[in-house]
Amino acid sequence: MLKDRSILLGITGSVAAYKAIELIKGLRQEGASIKVIMTEASKRFITPLSIELASGNSVYNDMFDSPLSHVSLSADADLFVVAPATANIIGKYANGIADDLLSTALLAFKGTIIMAPAMNWRMYENPVFQKNLQYLVSLGIKTVGPERGSLACGEEGIGRMADIEKIMEAVRTAFSKQDLAGENILVTAGPTREYIDPIRYISNRSSGKMGYAIAKIAKRRGADVTLISGPVSIKPPEGIEVINIETAGEMHAAVMDNVSMSSIFIMAAAVADFMPSETKGSKIDKKERLSLNLVKTVDILEEAGRFKNKPFIVGFAAETGQRLDRARRKLVDKDIDMIVFNDVSKAGSGFDVDTNEVVIIDRKVDRRLPLMYKDDVAMVLFDRIKELKDNGR
Ligand code: PMT
Image (cartoon, rainbow, N blue to C red; front, side, top):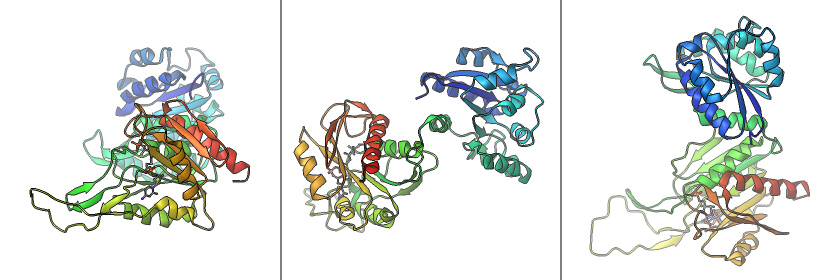
């Protein structure tokens, strides 16, 4: 996504400055070229040599090394990122102060700016700082974080610089088409757990990776996203409303509460098809044999498919083997718009892997895709949904 993009990175004097190395490496790995301006204070936290080696470019610091560098650096960049961004640089930029190379280059820049604030929680909550920050946000400056956690001073509070992956995602979003703006997208992800007793349950191998990739790409392309998630160990992307559930019954209730507000509903979760007919209130004793009586869970997709004013609905079909006919039958029986077939018995496809090999089946055509990262599957999926929606469905 970032191939041939030119990013100007400002590093300011925060203990989080060392994390800039990881950010630079991540951005370069995705194809961007990085030029860095360091403030004097940032050089107390990380050496320009380390940054030079990570970025593969000379580091800029002194306004007078080359008198017009603030103008040329800004003119050459597609995006300006300041990470970490201290209260000082945010205050200076909000008030039009240009007294070093970074603040001057910021004023000379005309494109998108992303700032990742990092500071002590008292500074962050200070109304003077908040006024400056809100002013920048009102001008369209994008901010990522900060997060709550233990701070360099040993205190707990808000002020930690956002995770590097979140800053990377903000960069990808800045370069992404915003063709899903205005869409309200409801996505389900992960497994459900059907309890036998308070400590034992029936579940499946879903990691949530497919559903989370769909939610992330939808957000990146400008949609408002609600994610209903079973128990997984993935962090949700920034800016997404997450509803955590455990059982099929809870997922059903959460979908029913939200589906009528959505314009697109994508059911990537692996909902248990069966649940114990009763859940014991206390731990079942160990015995030679235990028989479980299972009953069917409610079919959420089928119920949503019966709605009168339904959104564009996408289901997933987890099949073992190339049983496309079964997937097609699900599309018709559940009366939905699209079903994504995946052969979960194939290596690298389906459950708990980063990749998937799918066939996107809609009412018109089948589209067989090669083995791809789940992010890329989500990209193609939305391209097809957009195409169909733009043509009347
Ligand atoms: O989470 P990952 O590790 O990334 O794995 C991704 C995945 C394999 C879970 C995903 O790609 C996938 O295939 N999800 C659907 C799994 C599934 O339940 O398939 P199914 O063929 O049994 O069900 C068909 C559709 O009905 C699915 O959209 C399912 O969410 C839905 N369903 C199923 C049961 C039920 N009670 N209610 C439902 O709505």
